[in-house]
Image (cartoon, rainbow, N blue to C red; front, side, top):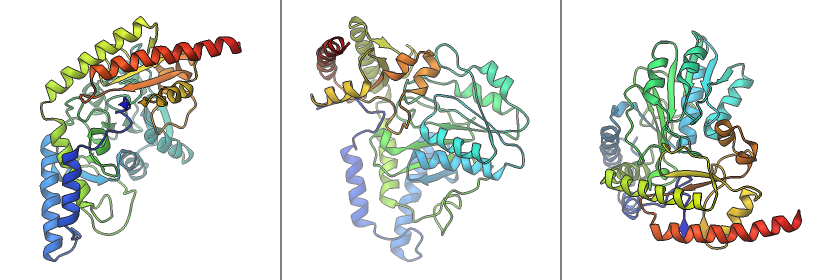
Length: 377
């Protein structure tokens, strides 16, 4: 099997899984309970939270545990907009965002909020001049992902934050799901940030929202006591402990890991260009993600043809509900590219031998499918 869909989800690191299993077996108490078993569980969560806060450069009190990035994004967006709607109902975002950003915004639009999309430069980055022009006194939220999940475009988060800071009624939220483990990100200027452990070799079902402590939000989930008043529910001790471990491990030997990924990305680009395959990701995109277009072949057809060879890539993001990639169209302005795009996402665990096999197989399958297309037309 050759797995090239790491941006959709990553395999769980064995030692992370072991942490989860050991904690599940040994720490059985509810961390909200007052007895010794509960106290032991709370101590473990506190230790994990301290580690996560240290790695990300935030305060322990600023971490809200969620079921993943989708819940974190929903909590951030709805939490801010419902709490501060008396200040204004103007929201700014981009066409590159994940569905867990765009769908909550569509919901809020039905509730009377105004959603405005900032222009992008030719390489897919936020047009900072256009952001300056679009942001207003009644803007309450700017939500822009640090890295596009489909194209790997890295956004100028610091510069965006500086613009938003000029407007004290506005908050800046960024989805950093594709950044964790792929780059070192400075959250000092960000008001809210979302991520999920399954993207950095952690367990599925756990993520977090970083919310700066001076910000008040309307909770998405109401109920009993938890690690924070902003999200009710029994804290999942094993998942939290395992996420802290996954976060620590992914940043070990980080420069060495990313050097390998960059080399693999360069090789992949060069080989695909020899096959006259269109590359949609800009050259300064994160090296872990490479978006391509193969004309005249439906992306689903190519995906399943490769799947038969036990090679796994993706079309759009795994959570997308659209038939074509809105993100690719937003950057390329080309419907053909957007409707025939494929995403290859690699990792430091990927080998050059795997990519060699992938390219040979892709070329062979493409020729076979192209022949069928020509015969049918």
